[in-house]
Amino acid sequence: MHHMTLAEIARGLADKKFSSEELTQVLLARIAQLDPQLNSFISLTEELALNQAKAADARRANGETGALLGAPIAHKDLFCTQGIRTSCGSKMLDNFKAPYDATVVAKLAAAGTVTLGKTNMDEFAMGSANESSYYGAVKNPWNLEHVPGGSSGGSAAAVAARLLPAATATDTGGSIRQPAAFTNLTGLKPTYGRVSRWGMIAYASSLDQGGPLARTAEDCAILLQGMAGFDPNDSTSIDEPVPDYSASLNSSLQGLRIGVPKEYFSAGLDPRIAERVHDSVKALEKLGAVIKEISLPNMQHAIPAYYVIAPAEASSNLSRFDGVRFGYRCENPENLIDLYKRSRGEGFGAEVQRRIMVGAYALSAGYYDAYYLKAQKIRRLVKNDFMAAFNEVDIILGPTTPNPAWKLGAKNSDPVAEYLEDVYTITANLAGLPGLSMPAGFVDGLPVGVQLLAPYFQEGRLLNVAHQYQLNTDWHTRTPTGF
Image 1 (cartoon, rainbow, N blue to C red):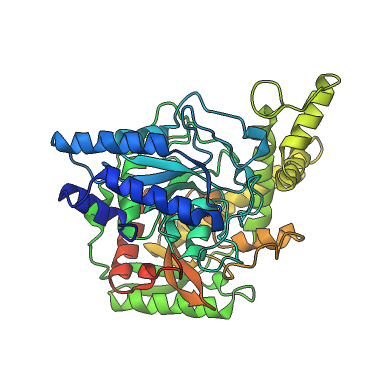
Image 2: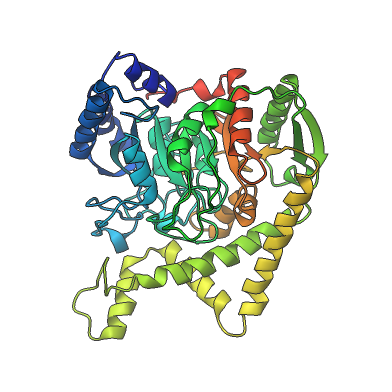
């Protein structure tokens, strides 16, 4: 059962080959057996899962149907879940139980999904390796000595190890696509505003976006269908009709114009990954796509701009965690100032403190114009580059990451080296574009991902290209040894 995709589970449940309760029990037992070596979960919700599975089976018995009805998933631990710990991977929220469900959680629950638990993540989604979590690092099932990527590394590791078929995740600068690349999964960051952020604890509000992590593009289409849609509770949610993502998966790629930016193939890219990218280009060309070299001239400025904007927004968003209203509070504070200082100093980890400090500095008097305002101007230039490119092509293709997954601890002493790993993913967040990473091969036994970018609200186009690619390749079917 654990090797089935979300689509296969939907068909099996519809054909009454097994029940949701049976499947849930199998996966919960598998998590108990295998997750101690991965550390992909922060909280398990066995009782809730079994109750939801029984309810889903009852709904099917009454004639109700739906691709997600009875499907087991997990939520990244920054989606608020009523009465269940929502920690954000931080000591600061270790004791926080949300009084309500995030919109994504509520929508998927209404569709009949079964929540197996909450997955591990970089603290407050700040990291590219899932090593900054208060609950310890997550390990990559393809090689337990390597990182699974971050910040959605818990969701990625759990799906890659076949502990569950799919999971929710979030992407602020590549935190869905990079873990997908490192663990041989398909991960989709939707257009900014396509999926509600209400109840999703914020890191950088203008960049954060929720999306699906699964083994196939077909599964991502199914899960995104349940997540997407306008939400009046979220002021950044866009009132745009949600298409049937599964309906367009089998469209022909004949004549599809794919742009390959020349800036992607610089000295920083592992040549073996470049080779996998070129292989994927050839495969899509055989399916009828037309390949064209394009340019994104301002890409080189994206990392410095992102690492001003994101920490600036983080310093503002995380100011609410002060030891007063909820979350961690230091013991025996001498006064209010001591309460603030020690609660935040003890509750936040080193990476979060680093980004808060950088952000506060960038927003401070005398530096706002020099740093934050300039970064926002670069953001506009990055967006303009994409708009110009999409006048010439339908899809942009390139590597998801410059290197395969690195060893645990290898970049802990050099945060900037870790930041540079986001070079190909952060531009989509700066511009608000949808992006997808799909499995495209291996380097030294570690998975490699290829990234696809599309114009606003063209998630269906990304899923179509990835699905057609996956019908003609078998990279996405490979399973890590031992799982």
